[in-house]
Amino acid sequence: MIDVHCHLEQPDYEKDRDEVIEKCKKELKAVITSCTHPNDLSLTLQLVERYKGFVFCTVGIHPEYVKEISEREKDEFLERVKANKDKIVGIGEVGLDFFWIREEEWRARQKELFLELINFAKELKKPLVIHARKASDECVNILEKADAKKVLMHMFGANHLVKRIVENGWYVSMNAIVLRSKKHKKVVRDMPLEKIMLETDSPWLAPKKLLEGVEARNDPTSIRIVAEKIAEIKKLSFQEVWEKCGANAIRFFNLQVNCI
Picture 1: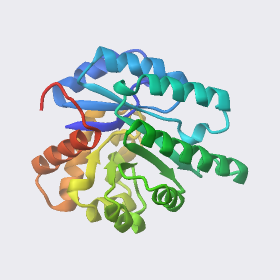
Picture 2: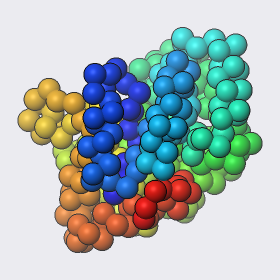
Picture 3: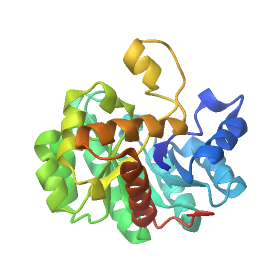
């Protein structure tokens, strides 16, 4: 009932953002939009204010942007985040991306930024939402070394690390990638339901595009399809998955939703 990871600030929603959110309000309890670039912070905070108790946000610097954000821009962004910490439910998505960033010098910079943002989350007493692409082992190592406690691994597909994720008390969130990815299906199979949340990463990863190759924009209501697949994999009822994953989100992010 809660999409814990979407991107409502993206240009894909520019023409009908309010209509999309109103549609979501008819089916979901809440959505958490993820601001991943300093340029998107103002719009993100406006959405949180306009849809108080329904739209929540996490904010961070996506590792993909490590080359384009200067030290000054980063520091100014973190100061703005700190000033608005009461409007923010988590820091993320942050982490490592070795798919888009391949130069060793920039990967090293990603790691430095990641550690800084982990400590920033601790300072603000906020949970972390982690992006780990082609760098899951490195991400988990850094998080463990930094003694990060409240962690959500977004769109996590590294099944060989599930045991460590569970032992650390961390969570994973799953989107429509689970409809076709064997490794993500294995993560769902092996993670306890008490540690799983639903997400879409919308506007990307539309089920229609993943399954049929048809260009389509995703939106938060597709978490229903994700919940159905999780229920199938874990041999549970849809209702149990739907309700439990929502309760996990409310507890993890301490969401003050309009109605429960």
